Length: 108
Image 1: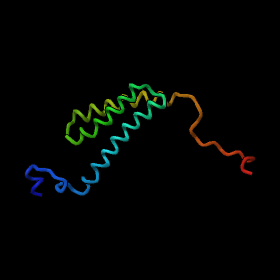
Image 2: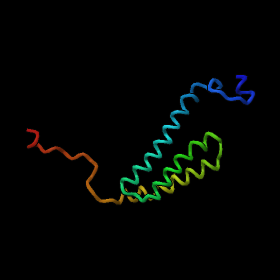
Image 3: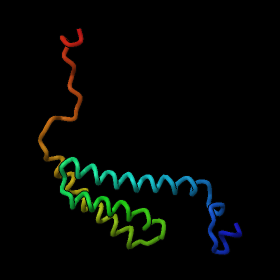
Image 4: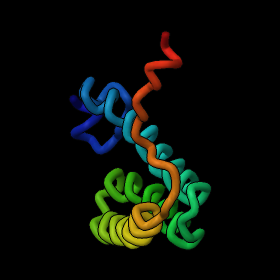
């Protein structure tokens, strides 16, 4: 506790929940960045994918540094990228992703 009060922060000064949440948060930020890459490969505009990646990677450090401006800007960038990505992918015509029923003759 003395390390936390004196301003020095070591891993032992954090609670077990904080030690668990930090790696999970990093994995979540990487996951959002990978979502942006997948959106680009699925046919959404590249600028929308870039906004998702930039927003996703800036969101975590904004929380870590308690920077409200960085969190808000990152969230706005991510949202600005997700809206056209969803519009593009929802309007896309193609094969349905739903599972089609099996042909009864093929089973027998």
